[in-house]
Length: 172
Image (cartoon, rainbow, N blue to C red; front, side, top):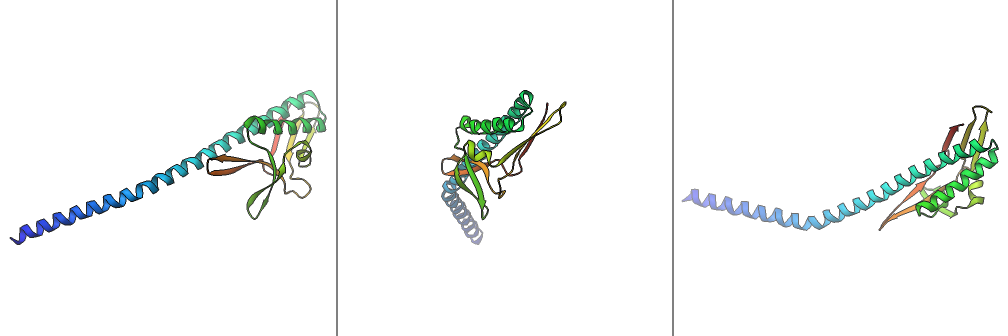
């Protein structure tokens, strides 16, 4: 008789444990789903930023090469690459800004236009044949300003930055 009682007790304890685990799992499932959805949105924003960074990098390199093939005037090359950066942001459908970093956070300082980008970039042409054309984001006089754009994916946002010290070089 004691053997049956112990077996029944064990069976009831096992059922209670299964029900408790199922109940806890059911209550955690929505939270897990929310966390998973949030992670997917963040991943989407990161992917969009990576694609935009690659696009901008390619646009800068292509314009630098094309411009250096046409002229050896560093001011003309700089103006062409500056304009290409602005148009590339527009093609991506993201608003280009001038930004700085304060306390580890990206701060928008204003819209990125021809005058603003001209203050924070530099182009150089070295040699005649072959020619080396170089383009750099200098950060301006205080070395604190850079082009950026906010990429938004529903409730999440992340900044795309062309960092101070960005350097592109082409041989023509």
